[in-house]
Structures are given as C-alpha cells and as structure tokens.
Amino acid sequence: MTDIRTRFDGLRAAEHADPADLDALWSDLATVEVDEMLGAWRGGDFATGHVASAVLEKVRWHGKRFDSPLEAVPLVCRDENGELHSNLAAGGGGEASLWPVGFRGEVTATMVYDKLPVLDHFKKVDADTVMGIMNGKLATTFGIDDLYYFWLERDA
Image (cartoon, rainbow, N blue to C red; front, top):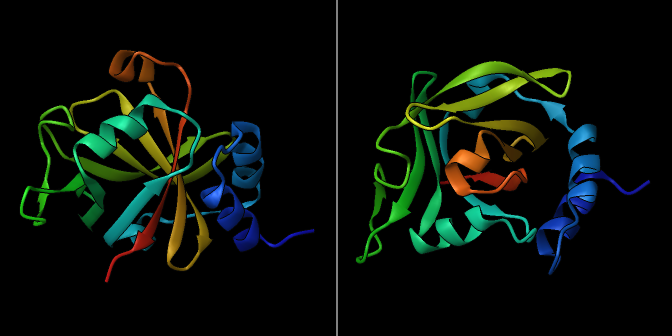
C-alpha cells in the first residue's frame, strides 16, 4: 500500500482529484488536536472543480492563521502589493475559532467561522501538513452542496 504522503502528493498534483479518492485518504489520516493547529499556515486546494477554489483564487488566498483557539484568521490573503492581510469581507465579515468537533465519527480540530455556517475540519498528513474538508451549509454560502477539499502547510 502506498504511504500517506505519496497519496496526498499525488492527489494534490492531479489535474482532477476525485472526491472519492480524497475521502479515502481522509479516512486514513490521523485526527488533529486544536493546539497542533496553532501558528501560520499556507494553503491550497485539490482540483475538484469546487466553486470555492475560484473564489479563493480571486481574493488571493494565502492560507490561515491560528493565534489561539479563540483567535483564528480563516482568510489570510495577499493585497495588491503582496502584503498579507485578513480578508474579513470574503469571510462573511468575521474571523473564526478552533474547536474539537465530531465529523464522520471522529473528533478532530475544526475551524468554526464566526459569521458563516461553515466548518473546516482538519486531519494530519504529517507534522507540518494537514488536509481540510469544508463542511456546513455550503449551499447557503457557495450555492453548491459538494464538500470543499483543501490542504495547509506550516508557513515559516
């Protein structure tokens, strides 16, 4: 059986990532504790064709930052000058927090948006990489029911 990192890297590089393959990888990953998520993260997504991908590209999404469990910045983006900032407008006007939340029968670190009916669940690929699944009322937020699959790597 191929190791977790090889599977993750293959799906991340794929021109099209099948959600069934992403779900299979997700089920093999270890859960994450809230404290393990603290710090700055650079992000990207898997090529599933989800509308959130185009939205994040438009706002020049860089990643997320977790200063404490109650102080999370879900949309760290680049401005016109390349400087990082929190894009409150794209995040529904608020930031977020981190909680241990049950998802698919496991409790794992989850980012809860302050002003959107959306949850980002995280599982560990390795010490510096996590996979995320955006869940919640995505039809309300994006007009689509499909889950959004993404990844985060620790940002120096």
